[in-house]
Image (cartoon, rainbow, N blue to C red; front, side):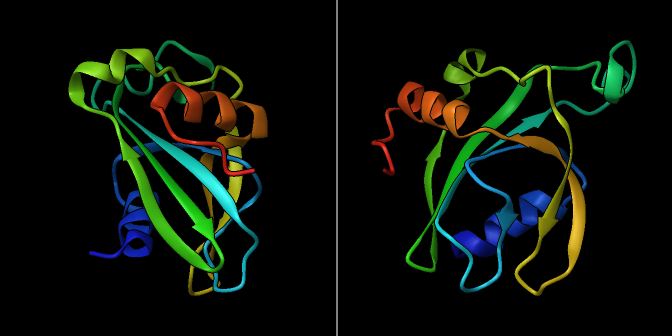
Length: 130
């Protein structure tokens, strides 16, 4: 599966995914360069209660990083299970617009935060995209 198809699956699938993006998330051809992290969180009884915004469960079940460079999406990183404890969901997550590769717009949860993406990249051992 190519990186764009995999990324689209994470964003449109039924699992709860939090997006941390350098810039607004646009998957269409011709979109500007971008790097995003996807943090998947647990489903179930704890996932909707106890915290504002419906995020009661904050344990990261998967952490992945994708990058758009020169019009091509690539998967840069997927955390190993024993390293997931080092990834946290920011408390300032809100609804963000996502433009899918076919131009359809949807709403997801996440943040646009260039500094946080740089911090996560460093923590993951991914070179800077600057």
